[in-house]
Length: 246
Image (cartoon, rainbow, N blue to C red):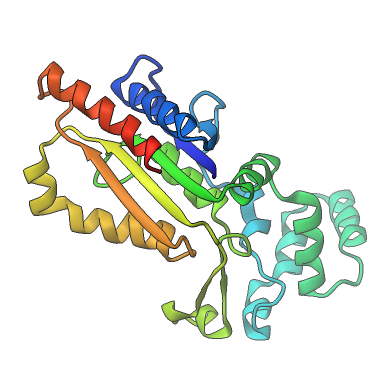
């Protein structure tokens, strides 16, 4: 199986990185192909900026939605000075809003996002390894999801979806599974009693199941600073076995 593993922790000597290494070893021992994306190592930018706008446009959106975008007007207003506005008018030509959207998407989609989307598209399954930050993913990984799982790539919208109906979201991902492995500060009792349900809804369901991943599994290594060495070694062995059984 072709697996894409996305890793988000700044420390190469961290326990979280050791989990990554053991998981990768297990995958390879089982004959899987694992492509690792280390978000800190590649300096991935997790912040959505203006350059991401073409990834959140839909030339097939309902006419009233396209009209409310005022896309031509906004682009002309963003061009400062007479020469810039002249150049923008020539660039836009006589295209209508759908035509402008297609032009922007053809020429100006961010390259770093396209690279990541190609990796996602090649994978049959996904894995994510990161610590728990504020009942979810760290900003680096959350930003990766937000910038990479874009409209038209990870999901689409029906006309009803554009008008606000959450049932109008169309899943476009076709991966067999996603495995989430997270290290945490607090113990298992805390997560089961207070945090697990929230994380399941926010991360498992809306980040992955909603865009179409067929099965989402989760493994947590709790209280990594509070457990003894034997438990930590047990965690690493479990990470290896997760790879072997993937």
